[in-house]
Image 1 (cartoon, rainbow, N blue to C red):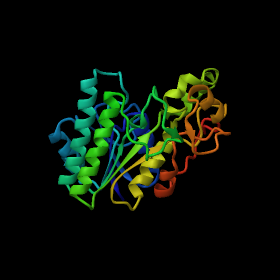
Image 2 (cartoon, rainbow, N blue to C red; image 1 turned 60 degrees about the horizontal axis):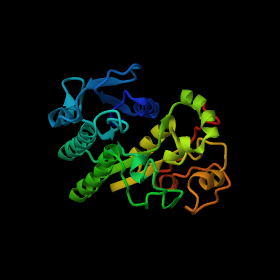
Image 3 (cartoon, helix red, strand yellow; image 1 turned 45 degrees about the vertical axis):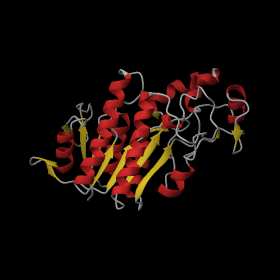
Image 4 (spheres, rainbow, N blue to C red; image 1 turned 45 degrees about the horizontal axis):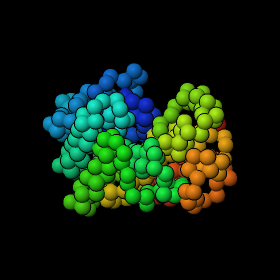
Length: 284
C-alpha cells in the first residue's frame, strides 16, 4: 500500500482527493492547519511555512506513522484577494519550497502539487494569444497569487535538475466545483463576461482528484505541468458565440461550434490518462 500525505486535505479539492485515494487503496494522511469537518483519515495539524514542521510531517510523527512514499501538496491560500499580496505570496511560495526541499532531503521521489490556471493570464484582461489555451502559452501571472504558483513551477524544474530521479508534477487546476455548486451555472448564461476570466472553464472536484491519482501513478520523471479542467464549459452557448462577443479576433485552433473546454487538456489525456468523468450536465 502506498502511503501518501495530502496537504490541504481539509479543503474542497483536498477532501475529494483523499476520498479518491482511499477508494483506490492508498494509505492517506491529511496535513492541514484546519481540522476537517469530515474526518476521512488521520489528520496532523502543521504550518508548512515552517521548514521544521514540514520535514517532520513528511518523515513521521511519533507513533502515528513513520515514513511516506509520496506527497500531494494542495495546501495554499487558494485565491488572490483573500489576504494582503505579500502574505499570499510568502505562504504559497514558502510552503511549496519547504515541501520540495523536505521531499528531496527524505528521498521522496513522487510529488504532485497544485499549480493554477491563473498562470495562463487570468483574468484575461488581455485576450489570450489563441484558444484553446495550452501548456505552450508563455506564463503570464497577473497577481501575487499566480506569481507564487509560477515560482513553484520554476522551483520544481530546478529541484528536478538537481535530482533527475525526482518527479514533480504541477496540476494547473481550473476553478474547483462540487455538485452543489452547479445550481449557479444557469445564471452565467445571460452574461458571457461573468466567467470570461477563465474562458468559462471549471473542474469537478472528483475529476481533480482523478488527475492527482493518475499523476501519482504516472511513470514520469522530472518536472511537468498539466492543465486540468473539465472537457466542457460552464455555458450552453457555443464557444464561437462566446469568443465573438468577448474576445473577437483571437486565433482559434479548434472548431468552436460546441461547448468544449477552452483550457486544453490534451496533454493530461495523453501523458496521464486523464479523462473527465463528471460535469455539470450529469453531476452524479
